[in-house]
Image (tube, rainbow, N blue to C red):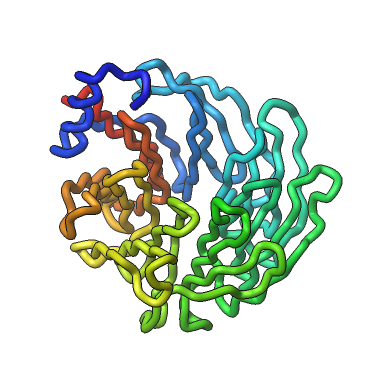
Length: 326
């Protein structure tokens, strides 16, 4: 909360803790979508069908300028996932292609990456990793002269739902469907493409991991179809997580975010339910159902700032404003 007066910082922190916020809808769209989004500075990037649009936040952070700053196209089918890295947007498409877009110019390149849709992508240190329904993960260079030159192809034996590069840039983790392979979480060497280890044991079939994120080089969080969020510390054990939180209504967890401290937010598969958790406790702090029947929707993507939570659903982009609660 740098730059925020101490008194206001305390107030906002108390609002998060007590669940006091004002809910609003930032955007609506007519057709059902599976949107993904990223935040950078005062800008929001969100996918809609086969486009990625950039919008500028107004000073309150709870509303957007309606005219987009930019529109990034190139995919023939829906954008499944994208990340921001090195002034680029790296996008994964249902057309099996990866798109590379320079944010501040018209430069766009797309290349065939997988035989089926690319479900996930990450980019750090000039390296792109991608995961697909075709049961492979691949490693690519971001360098403009080498775009589309595959460095490694990894046979995962399972659909890859999520992927993340370690902050040390030495390895990456894949979250898979847990149908063809017994472990849905595996860590691979980024330089050789070889398997380093798998996380956990005794996962039930179908316990696929839909979202995974590193917090530090040795700690990561995962969530998915088996309704648990798990916190892993590679220094302690790779076979057992150090903490887990269960979704109380047995709903699939599509996404997660943290504030880098004690707060954890999750997005559920039914009724647009966003839950806030204190990682020092087992139980959920607060739940915010953002939709109701007949428009029940998963929460496809979550993003946090110090004052706001943004949630992307099938028909709307919602904001929970903890600075100016109702």
